[in-house]
Image 1 (cartoon, rainbow, N blue to C red):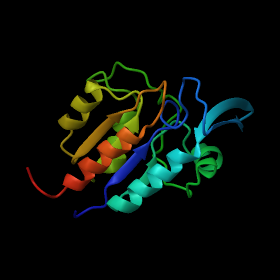
Image 2: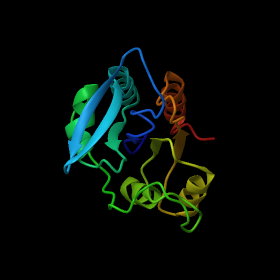
Image 3: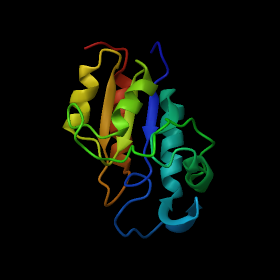
Image 4: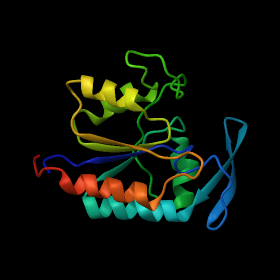
Length: 172
């Protein structure tokens, strides 16, 4: 692989599932700009992502509207080091209605990736986001992993990313 692939990670719906979880999930209170957020996190997610990055030579990056707060509140609870953050303006919520119906984060992801291959774990990616990314001449190879928000990131999601990353550079 010529360029280091990126592993782009959302928080809500990916690392913080919307459904009730038990087992190794713990609930944390996070206060950001005076607002209290409750998040449910599993240390296993951090372990899986670190192993995926190590085994594939990829770089982990936050792709979340949490932005830098992910390094303060989420990463440490998952055992992740401080990660680079894709800047998202406050209006970058998962709304639709742009050129292809892509969500507001998608143009920022495309700009940040700048032609590098990437895997994007997000619960709100759709065919519209894929269409938008494929239409941009400055976007390289990518895999969108639509994580089921109810349950969050799974081993199967991570395995799918690992398989795709293993095939990079082999041609078609």
